Image 1: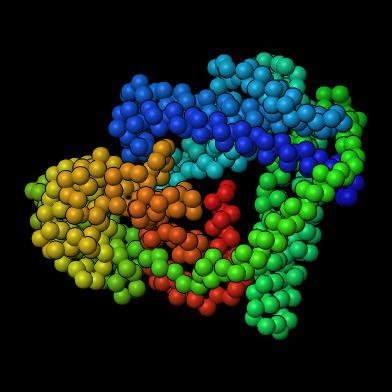
Image 2: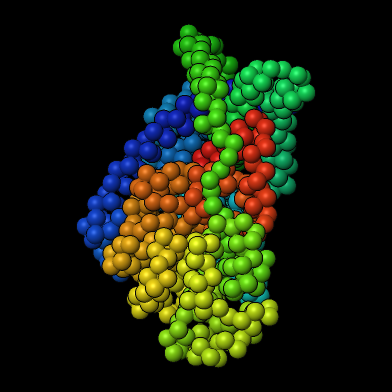
Length: 585
């Protein structure tokens, strides 16, 4: 294993330098493109484009220009993150002296070949399909792309969509595997997109078994090396700290020391595993092209005075980080949390959905608030219901706006009557904060005006928040009724989302990074995260910087929150590190 990994480890300094340089360049270019995008948005009085108003992108020239800027960003990301790295890997596996400017030039010039219909398909696959299905490479601009959980839940509930997805995903996987070497052909052989695709498919078809075998061996070797380093630097030392009786100040310092070492190991691994895999791919590319026998032997490099000084700098930085975290332990890794627990659809999964019984259950379970959905009936009243019809909850295949209140009140949700919005206000006054989502086809300005009127009637301005996926509606309420709290729910946005005209920003769980939560607070807004149901994600967000989590499992969340105060120093540190690391991904 040592001999197998040696050339890869010898290549690490060059890979590290290339990544640092290109990340800096990408940061500058992204800032420039971002500034241009902000100017376009500000020219039409916007600060962001969100999941609630995507039509702007294809109905205005400013929106179309934004799409063009986004596409340019994807091409630039591909040039530096992938094409340039492939050029770097080629130099390394062939034993050439690495020249970062030459790599950058090769990355940029080869990317020009992707300016074609076929090349555009490659860029879109790399940028959007690859990160979602987890195959191949993506740029750093889109590597965190995901399908929101509420969309996947919707697909899973539909047999038609599930079947289509079951066909589409394997098809996309096959396409991705067959074209794994398409960028290598463009960058290293100067081929067109079409010719490179044909070459890739030929190479993969002829060498698929060996490719799979070689990559399995590569990942096994990498996993063994990482596991060994983790045991030596993290697992074993921390296990000793837990069993050896030491003064609390000593054990806390050792926890910080080895916890920081483990964190850096994780970051180092995450930083380099994919580039090293690309290096292995490039080695196999040359081997397959010449029919085997290609040897990868990275040249030995003498340790220079600069390298020694750099190693000393990183050692000093590590020690400073440890001392700083130790000195600020309680503020960096707090024992308690003020994050509120908000019941989804009145009572979550613990009571009939969107009912008064649900509100009562949530209150007794320790929730600080409840989220409910309101829709307007045919005769102008407001009732609680999430879906377009009552089919799922009450067996009635009609919309609320097609029924009078007297008809709706005859329906039963698991034995409980459908609740009216006004009844919910009366039930929650002085007990729970209501997050009222304006839902369905009747979510319009009339609904907003009527909801505000009822909130004023019950004097619950400080106990209600009107929320919606429709930003235009939230902006209307916030502008016309500044005394009413508002919240905008989003799962995708571009621009300064926290700068939107509202009091709360609701983030879908997969997108709620520590960076976004901090940015929300900097704008003077509060942050909600939805929908947080399993124990691990509840613990994750309850120990983070959100102001509230919306969950179906209220009792479980309350138990998780209550148990946080009894965590050990190691658990407190690990909880916070998970948040920091997840935000980086």
